[in-house]
Image (cartoon, rainbow, N blue to C red; front, side, top):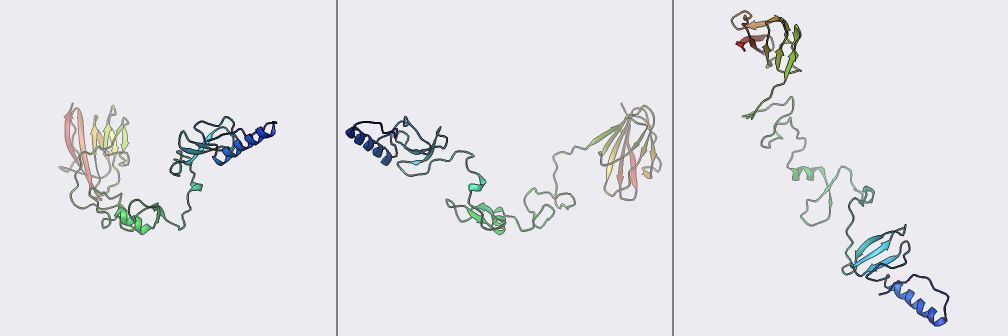
Length: 249
């Protein structure tokens, strides 16, 4: 084990030879020592026997970089976030995902689309609108799709809109429950009839109606005192209305 400052002083011949031998010993042993060399240089190697590591001095000569373990030759652990994408092996083929399907404990492979679909158990072209390809338990179709079979909902929260004006045009994009809180009669304009749509109006005041409504009993109901609730449903041609209750206080 030897380290050296790599400076040969002006001295006698015998001492110079001894000093040179110490330099060579330091070189061939990679400056092996259990403690850091007292004099360091950029890119200098140090066999750190105290920690069983071969290290190299960085370019700024202000830190050591671990290279590998002396006793085993294993590459030293790579620090987090120290490898950039540019340093990773290129993906040879286009449209590939890195992974492995050839068994555990092996090198990374370039997986084809077919391999990825196989281990993900997804058919080619499957999406959330395809009832044939989407078979997972609990899968739901996206907007525009069709669901078949039983559907169990734990709860539904409807969107509620409020108006304090004396006129109000129902817009189902704003919700399905509408509170009318005007201090006087509110004239309600119905939306266009659309099959399967429904909504509820909670009126704290008397309501007048603009639009075509087929009322239960053949005529618009007469509201009593307090809050009145109206329910509407459409078949695509007409709105069908009924007074669900009145006199709520």
